[in-house]
Length: 413
Image: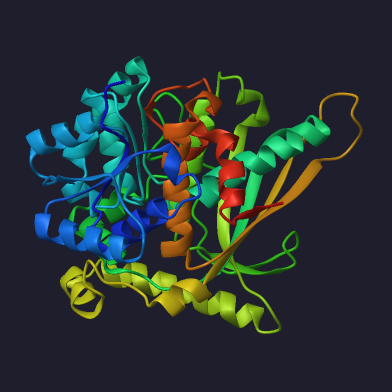
């Protein structure tokens, strides 16, 4: 009530923010909401408005706000019902905005994969946001909606079809695309802040009282292997240390809610890169070796400066052709024990998510913007519990997001 805008895009003049602005300006539901473009540079905002106008598109306003200015972040949060942020690295530029959104009871989504920073936001703000019913939802890009929502989707299908509580999900990813400068900047920021060490915590995002006693079956994979369920060679997936922590927080938060019966208490989630074709073993081996060397190299002195020197600058990213020609697929295999009397053997379900477009850009923009639109336009469709807090996509948005993503071209099956 009383907000000038339904949505505000913060970081709108950056590489990813410009994509989000264009997506919202051209959306089929455009007449149903008012949205603003927000960034620290008046000049760049005016240039973006002119660019949209030249293409027959428009936003409803601009907000000049610096991420490090608490008063400006308060003004931004007070102006909109939902803020979506693309302004990373989030450990450097995101904290004041999250604080302001919690203070002003403004729902929030972003595209971070910086799980150590998410842990800080949980510690600072979860209790207040939960009490007020404010949904603070990090990780609404390619990391980690396909993994987090995919695990919920396949577990729900398994339970609906067999009555089984899901005890484990294995996800196998494939994709093609580019990487933008903002993503690299976030990776560098985590290295400098000791984030790589903290990310080794398998339950980094779990509530402290909801960590399993045993870590057996949860450890990050390190070696290639042949998967009989996926019928292919597989390797560790480089985004696994991010996505698995998000899925595990979802499981922990769902315990005790109306959807808690979807998962067994000892639920386990892992994800991998899926190698294909007759050279699958070689691809899986190369993928595992490359990731291992990257992890070792990133820990060396000066690694952050070297990465910055050779990578794209913030504000830069792949070409339009690269982004349009990319894709992602995620095969999810779930299993669980059926209820007594339902027959012998383990219950199993396979689901597949697929989308056309560069995962880190095109797919991320669809996931981010549709999450924000769900919060702004269809809040009555959201899960009633846990309601508020620093949540995950699966717990804050749930399966209500699936129809929106399907209309945006992401397939669930």
